[in-house]
Each structure stands twice: as structure tokens, then as C-alpha cells.
Image (cartoon, rainbow, N blue to C red; front, side):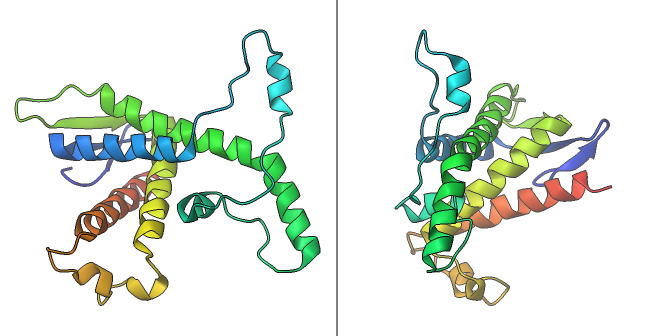
Amino acid sequence: MAGHFEATPGGGAAVALDEVEIAILRSLAVQLLELIGPGDEPAEGEDPLAALFAEGPSEPPSDPALARLFPEAYSNDDSELRAASAEFRRFTENDLRTRKRDDALAVVRTLDRLSPTGDGGAVLRLTADECRSWLGSLNDLRLTIGTRLEVSDEDGGEDGSLYRLPDSDPRKPMVMAYLWLGGLQETLIETLMP
């Protein structure tokens, strides 16, 4: 189980994590929460139903990582498609942000409830619902890190130059995190497949 998820009864999954892995995952999830931003909670006395009909932004984010997390619905220079994309974003981005925030919070909460063993590690056991939140958050983390690293299709695979960085390269820790998160994501997907 060390380093990869394994299926558990009831549709969940489990993985053994050491204290450094737990700290890294928690830190990355918190950073993702900070990147996504706070939720728009109704003000005290405000009608909570009104929040359901609140409109979101119509312009794409300027931060490349956020633009990757909240992509355009239609990618074209046609003015009609730009208008349709803005309209789509206006009515969907708030919900998408909420889901991404909820997924990242689920990661933090499940990590916070771990009881470390004598060696500082712990076995993380997830329910089926928590697995879905973890999958979403692992994907968001990889998209964000990949965008920051400017990972492209050409960088992938065994011969990718990004993966052969010298230890002195300041991007090396993020590349290692990107690859590790990919391994966790892949094994979690495998546990959930019928």
C-alpha cells in the first residue's frame, strides 16, 4: 500500500503516507484553496436563495493556472463564440469554484483526521465520496503545477526534458510533486474502476 492507493470494501480506498507526504499534500491543498479564493457566502440576513442566482465573472482569469482550472467553454476568436463563452462562464464558474474548493477542503479534512503511527506516518482511508473529492483535487493540483511548470505534451513521456532536470534546478521539487501526484491519481483511479 505504500505510495499507492488500494481498494477498500464499500468502494473506498486507502494509502499509507509518511509524515512528509501528509505535510506536502496538506500544504498543496491549502495553496490550491488560496489560489481558488474564498467562497461567496451570503451576508448575514441575506436571502440564501439569492446566492443561488448570483452571476459569476464573464471574463477568464488572468492567472494562467486559474485559466487552466476554469477554461473557456469555446476556444475561438469568433465574437459570437466569445460571447457564448462569457455567458457560459457567468452561469457556471461560481459552482465550479465551489466544487473545487469543497474537494480541496475534503483533502485537508481527511488529512487532519489522521492518527499518526509511531513512525509519524498513517494510513489514509477514504470513503467512496472522499475518493471522488480526492480525484478532483489531485487533478486540480496537477493542472496547477503543470501550468506553473509550463508542462506541454512534448515534455511528457520517458524522454521529457522536464523530467530529467538536474537536482540543482529550482523546478525539481515541483516536478517531483507533479509526478508523485500523478502516481497517486492513477492508483486512485485504478481502485475505483469496476
